[in-house]
Image (cartoon, rainbow, N blue to C red):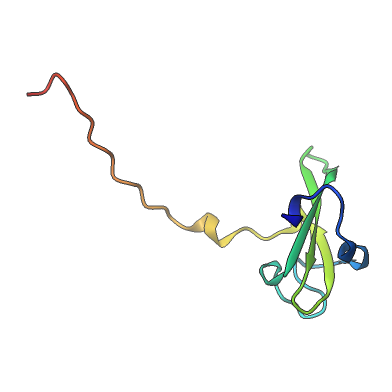
Amino acid sequence: MEAFEPTPPDWTQAATHAAEFQCPSCRALSKAATRVWINRRSPVYTEDRRRKWQEFYLCECNTAWWAWSSDRPPSELANQEREMPPRPEFFNPFED
């Protein structure tokens, strides 16, 4: 999987820093990317000691761009309520 390879793919060399977390050319979101690479070898530490990484995207419009992982908008999956699975019935040897 390219996203976690230690060395950057060639297409990342032409990447530009996106001011917003979307393609600077066509404004597509990162979900529309055809390729992704995360620079996990060089984290940056924020004032509150949190790590952030450069995330590189190759958009379907063939524009390479990058943004900080801390700038990524929250996932729509984070706000979904999960259904709790039914609790399994356990055998109790003391019940008749």
